[in-house]
Image (cartoon, rainbow, N blue to C red):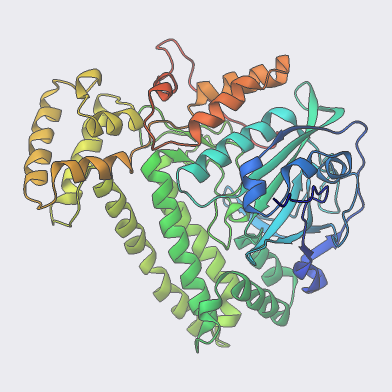
Amino acid sequence: MTHKKETHEPGWNFDNSYSRLPNVLFSTVNLNLVSAPKLIVLNDSLAASLGLEAAALQGEECVAVLAGNQVPAGALPLAQAYAGHQFGNFTRLGDGRAMLISEHITPAGERFDIQLKGSGRTPYSRGGDGRASLGPMLREYIISEAMHALGIPTTRSLAVVTTGESIIREAELPGAILTRVAASHLRFGTFQYVANWGTVEELRALAEYAIERHYPEVEKDEQRYLSFFKGVMKRHASLIAKWQLVGFIHGVMNTDNMTISGETIDYGPCAFMDVYDPTTVFSSIDRQGRYSYENQLRIGGWNLARFAEALLPLFHENQEKAVEIAQEALYEYSRLYKQNWLAGMREKLGLFKEEAEDESLIEGLLSVMQKYRADFTNTFRALTFDKIGENVLDGKPEFVEWQKRWQERLGRQSESKEASHELMRNSNPAVIPRNHRVESALEAAVEFGDYKVMENLVAMLSKPYAHLSEQEAFCTIPGPGSKPYQTYCGT
């Protein structure tokens, strides 16, 4: 019997393709050492999928890398430059508290950015300290992993390391660094940056890089930059529909937080909706509701228009003609979104084929849910398991009428009742990162050093469609006396 040789190598396989782009796009950075790094969370399953050895990542040398205290062999740390429309206002930005260590190539040949968030000052810090506190880093870990389990494209979290140092925000807080894994950190704002402060050739170089990395299927298209834009638009129409289908509210849909890969990024002021209310906003600074649940579709289109503006010189040398090309392409966005959203809502209701009245049926349910302040996730879960008696909608005249329409609609399809039930089981999660549950986990970890609450929560969130009996306790909504939930940026 052969025994596998024990290895202490983590398995990093680094490349630095971004550093080969024009210098306007990044700055190399010096390490900002921390005093006492300690690994507190490691995502073993993500490590395995990347071809990394979890045991080796827990070693002192690897923890030093994850803390930004050491550069691993083959890496070239840098901070990326980008711009962005933040709440509609355009500004020059960049990685002010993040460092791209390198790109890791997996054994399967996939390329992922390995980025440290909270690693200290960079040339783009704009007066900030470049650090992050423990609570928000753990929060991003929890929610990004929950999003992945829900089947929503997202950046992921490999590890959280405490720094042994305090940072000053509204109070003195424990410092921490998150290791974020992404298909890339290219953003709409990356293109906006080059369009405003670079040359057309630098913009073209960035577009070619993005195509090669994320949209190789359009490389041979005669109008490949337009095809590239349409590819990005298609992914975001799908992404935002997926957000809506689980009640996720991003909270900060600035153009610098929209990725070219179509992944969800930046888990600062985000949260999941409990009671169904399209006007729901969680961010403390979004006083006008710009990034409310009901506005996510519109803002996605607005952001895509800003991205298209940055690409105009590549669409056509004549600006008027380029604008015409962009506008024509953008007309497709709403249709693509609705197509994705309707398909997803049909699945949530166990419907296999399209009928003309489906949209009216779906909107009818949402209207009743809004009127009676029904919980979004639990209502679809109750429909899935025929437990509407436990829901606030039970016996309401409007819901009784709607349920009759729904049953008639189900009766017109050839698929069995069992098939519809299975479709609904696989489309309606039992658990989401309930805000009060997330806060309890963070309080236990940050205030008392107890990570078991968080570990249990993450375990329940890792199988949202399993509908296990032990998940029942994680389906409860906050009590009637709970204060409105609020989230914060820049923590």
